[in-house]
Image (cartoon, rainbow, N blue to C red; front, side, top):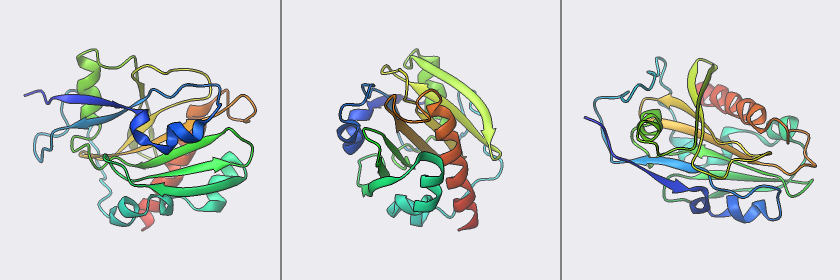
Length: 201
């Protein structure tokens, strides 16, 4: 049976939109949500997560612990400030780079209990304007997606770390940032770093 999946715009993520400030992009990427379920995953054509990461409790409560300050600065540049945001769909960490207006947000979307299957279901019903499965990141299936708000300097990447859980990375970059032309490449690097840290936790 197909699960019902709804879309929440990135505006729900509070400071992500706020910190984007006068960036060249307008946020409009969704976070997948669905009714809780414990069986029948994956579904809707989503790939299975063959090596699920189960030790996620620390990052669920402290999302900034998934990526160290040194690691994010090596990928995105000097960070001006960072901090966690307590959100309805799960806690995220927001990093604001010294060279503004450039930000990235990342975290576990714990409110979505269907993982990548929720995105595959949304795509099947025409609920997404961008849906692009990409090469696995460190062996974990991933999708680039959006529901409007596509543009240069922005990318929404979801990586399935379990069948029922995704790690999402969303850079919002201005033309001054070195990764402006390839925000998904930056998102992939950050997701890979977070996954390595989660596996080593």
